[in-house]
Length: 611
Image (tube, rainbow, N blue to C red):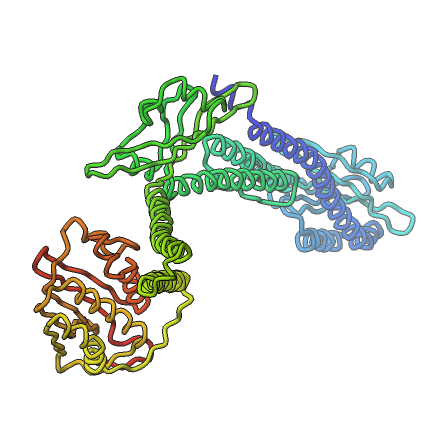
């Protein structure tokens, strides 16, 4: 079966047709060539014999004519000797015999030693008889008893108008037919060689046709298997070469299309893997099939596949169905409890996937962590409430005292002056509050650029202590300034840092009992920074309040702080100013033992000089 299939292949068919065509052509050419060659050789052989016979006829004509006129013995012997020398020396055809005959047909001379006995005998062949009768074209071919083919030519010897004898030539054609046989063998060998070469060339020709087809077949199979890294070799500009080019172009286009699809798939996978939001995809039954890394981190799960959306987000089937059909809002808030006391809040947005004529085929859930957003929103609400409260209190007081003055308190001078003083104090307190809020707003929006200058640290701290000397003496608080020798000057905004230090020292004085101590110190930190601290022996701050001490409007003792004239924004402003300088601020306190506030500032910024 395989053999039959092999002979049905295009390659074998092409080889067989090619070889048969060459064989038929060689046979036709061979028959014509050998026939023409044989005729040419025979003609040349016959012409040579005729030329030899004609030459001998001319040379011996005079001798035979003289012999007829003179019948002496001496002359006859000399004539026979001359003729014998003539036939033996002039005739050049090998394996040939030449006889010179007289007018009666007797042999006068022969060129073969073995036939010397024929001399004096009569040659009775038909060709000789015809030649003695004056007929010139006497040729015939015979096959002797040894099977050799011979050529016989008989020519008359004419002297004037008289036939005086004849020339009889017998030449073997063995060499001629041997030459023809050699030519036949050479031709057959050449034909066999040509057929062999034709077969090889046919194979090569068939290969040039079938190999591209085989390559196309292999490439088509490779493309079907998804391998596009190979190309069909283009071996020419013919139809097969054009087909190969078109197939390669098709393969490249298909590869590019699949590469683009794979690239888009990789992009989507990369986007899903690196999204800041979590993505969960579920099938039409609501079972999770795909999640990205962020979703697993947000849900605190290593693998979400196989879990139903209702179980994952704590929903019931009716709610999920309503979300998918659009009967309910597409977003829900999901509370996730953590190991600590706090909980994380996530917004889950569900979007159904619709397939044409098949309804809902799945659901995409996008998870957004809104914990910080809610915290900021809560802070904003608290900030608005605090601002409203801080403004409402003095406004209420001003309104009350103004109404009292309007009701007749102005008539009593002392009482009226006291009411006016209260209104003035509350107004100044509101002005300070609004001023601090505007300052914070400028710091938040980067509208308060730093004006750095080279500042001597020891002088700056001494001036801070001098500014509060009256308050210190009033409460009998001992203040000291201590600066390391290695610190001289740094680059900073002197006005804003003075505001920070004033706030810290003011708070230290407010919350330090009479007879306490305050220490203002500066020390060098590595690398290239200076720490300025304000330490007091005041009432301290409870541990639970340390985490929010820098929040805006936050007070440890709200009633006492308000009575002392504070707005609750001083530490917030101090933190923003220090952050603008590229530094940090920290607070350490023990209840009833004291508080230490440390401001760390970089020594060198831009073109600043080191301390």
